[in-house]
Length: 135
Image 1 (cartoon, one colour):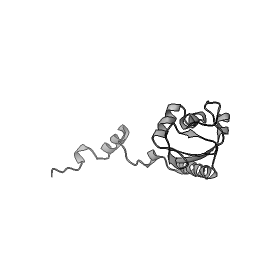
Image 2 (spheres, one colour):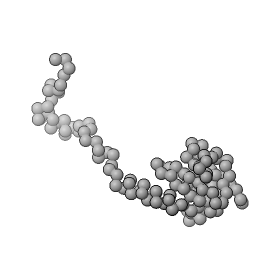
Image 3 (tube, one colour):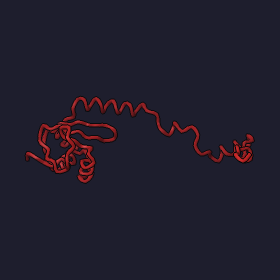
Image 4 (tube, helix red, strand yellow):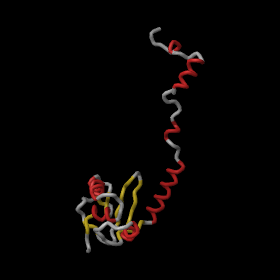
């Protein structure tokens, strides 16, 4: 077997859970071979470089073997080798995500809870004390 469709190879290499997901990603232009956007029917050959954009990160892998059957994860890892630049970028991306703040923590004031409303009313900040444009 010298050639196989790229969507089938991506599925066999376990980059995507289903072949239809792989086809959708290729159709969206998130997969390129040798810096060219391809169609799902594009045949993959040994030695080609494939770039996959996923979750804000571009992974670049070199095709080492061809398979159209999905096997175990250990067998799938023998189908490709990730480039050193891609490995560095992935490590940097994971560190940035680890040290980034949780977006929910940046919300200073949201909707007050029942307890917060009671405390506001006891402090003298009731509905009558609100600012009004009718003055």
